[in-house]
Length: 227
Image (cartoon, rainbow, N blue to C red; front, side, top):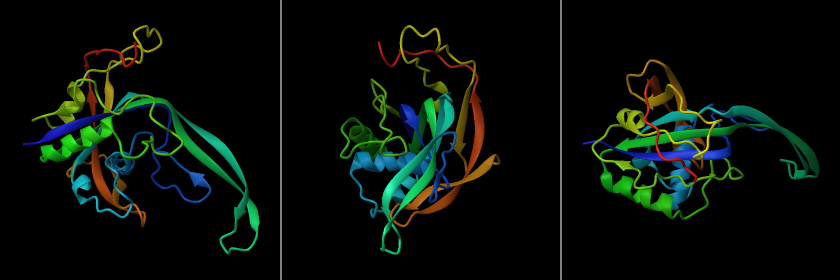
């Protein structure tokens, strides 16, 4: 039987890179599997050298509760030691991020014990959590009040059934959407391929997964995240 843990990802800035190299640090519009599993590994206290085969086996999906806006920072760093080890230089970079976005991520698996361990560690993480980059901490806890695990519920159904939450009770600027975009991992998916399965964080090796798109046409409105 499959179970799903839901992980809200809310913050003023998030970055979910898929091809970041050197002076251009990109972001995907939605959270990636490698980024969310990285957050889970931080909560569990796993090092970069630890095998994550058990986490990679979990199906991953995300619901876009508020898409936000992709913005870019221009960074300048002085006194950076050259790769050759002789002297320093000034390095510039473009760093892209998603501003004012809210996502609901989900992980599906049959090992209920593993999902319960993840939930417990998200409540009391071993290491500091971040939304893709260390400088982007979550604005809200990455768990749902009352419980994040949906026992006996598959990933897509859990993402469709979970109520949408406004940030605050007074939310004239934050009305419930008529439909929410969903991206789920699917071995038979025909809507694209993402190379974001973290085979090794230490060696920066990633595998591919197939995805498909869906929409939650009608979503119940839940309690606001903040009073």
